Image (cartoon, rainbow, N blue to C red):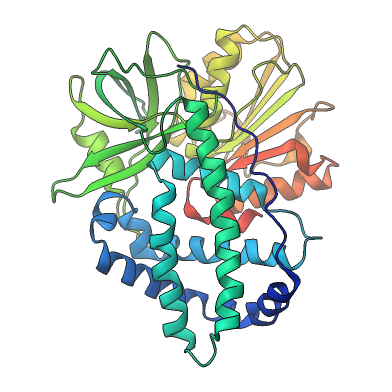
Length: 411
């Protein structure tokens, strides 16, 4: 079984004009109360289905409100496009949502559950006198246009993976564990069932890993694949997320890096993710990352090195210092293995290796007609995208991924 690339979601049907008028008129009031609506939605959803909080949704993101903001913003972004089709279509946002849903095993039957509790929250927050039958029908249409677009796209992802919708989990055993000096841990796993081997993946994809925590909760997180597929084995990298003043420690990353060893079993999903390169392309490639955003770039470099690709490749990475640079030696070795690759490094606290300060696109010799792949924090990605635009790079050539629910900030 081989994973295949799936194009971005098709354009949905247009919103009927009478619905568009109502959505356009009520979008400001919905937007003004969207945080309250989504918070109440999740409260209602988890009250009715508590298993979703312990077995599907990220408890850390829920505690910080990140998941709520992501849902609110995705719906608002989609609705804004429907009432003003001249705006850029949020197809990239939908593609990222669809891949994430597929990596969690989301199926069409779950969308009505979300609809039920979301619309109940809208009525509770705004009041039945505001949410008239006509307004409810208009927003109902918005929801199902978005939901149907995602359902169809996700169905294509499942078909491309050769599975029925939702059948994405595989039981695996850890065959190798490598601890990087930066604190990142790379796990190599293989299927425990020879009849269900792990498939190949596309460079840049990720898997969801399901961990059973000490309190019995089964939590899921996505981790990038960092090695070329080999003999039915795949490798993914995990960086432990430390607690900060406003954020709890990463539950799954801490559990995996602290407790999981060779011989332990893990449930993972088939590979998904849309930050992938075309293996047949010959155009120049620019890979720009910061921090743990390096991991999908390592997967891409592994593929290129395995194929001894002649492509011109420019790799740029930014980090706090060489000691925190994830998979630093691996990155250097992969770049050195490619005949036409260059590596540029920036460190906020350099020790003689790399440039000092933050990554600056103007310091790079950008190849003509290159494709650009970016991964890092929201601020980093916004800065780099703006710099690339100022350098004359067409937005269609820039592809990115953000390791948080806040990728709506980058539309």
